[in-house]
Length: 247
Length: 253
Image (cartoon, rainbow over all chains, first blue to last red):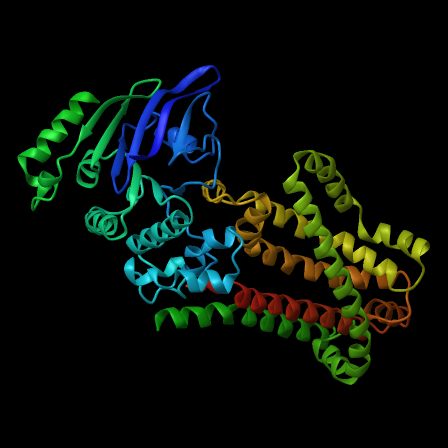
């Protein structure tokens, strides 16, 4: 059963549709990508899903609840890590709990167990500037996860790895896929990188045109994806070719 | 090692410049190029500073107390103004010009009026200090609040944060740097404001003492007060710097 359903969503700015009739869904433990060129309306769609914008038409359904235009229901990680520079990593990570009204001490205690799971051992008392780019992204992702645990355990990621160098990116892909398995994460993420979408996703929605529409849905075969050096295989190239043709 | 040497040199340069100026000043005064009653020698001022130290301290206590009360109230007023202007564009449009106008009135012009309205006690002095200190605090804090990362605010909203939570978790701590920068300015304004207000009426304080010695043509004592006022301001600015480091451990890289 689909965990998150976006149903016929349309939004316009100054009487011009930005995204039109978008329908997508994310199921339990599934990684779904929204792939499209810059400016196609991916972030606008994410803002609608996160409840920051209200669509002109259409609905956002989480589980069996209509959450259209309601923020605070889905965890969202943006392109930048957005860690508060004046808070230690543990205080950054426990921020969603503090927003929910939990006392500082209790919130800190509640997040301690996740640092090792996310490969962030001994970083609790450090400040963000003391971490590498990859570690900061992990911390930001942990914060998103902590928030998602409080709601419906679905994560929205807006180009989370775009600011990282190629080697760190590769490392983060492997790490994220491991996290997905370990924590049963359901993820909807935005990317404009075709390789990233193929490597990480179970399904890819291709978004294109003005106004932005879903032009194709591609399912990535699990057995093909789990093959060693998948990105060097013919299957990977076939997916890539198909996506390029569609976009 | 090279960096450490560079740091030491950077700290030494201004001290050397001050020392050279004092030597020139001492020479000009000692050789009678400028009469001593017009420009007392630094050595004479030093003697006064040592000899009158208890008296200067006694007066300094009054001035510092006035400056402290005025500064605390100025910070409170500046903070409230900045919060109100950040919350509402209407309040910003209504108050900002008024705030700028308060800064265009010369303090020496407004001080006698305050004495006339509030007497010779501490009240007019504190009010004058509030007027001169709240402005840098309000402007810097407001700038700090408005510089808050819009993406961070967006993220907080997705987590369901209220306006107050966004203020407490993002805007307020994000403006601490600006606050301390303005506090350094405000603290020196507070001391100078206290001295100016004491010139125009009062029973004790460095400004009152300065007026007395000026009337007695004891210019060496007057210079001693000027030195003392500068020293107090410098010490307080340094204290703010230390406090800033303590309050902003994340800045130490």
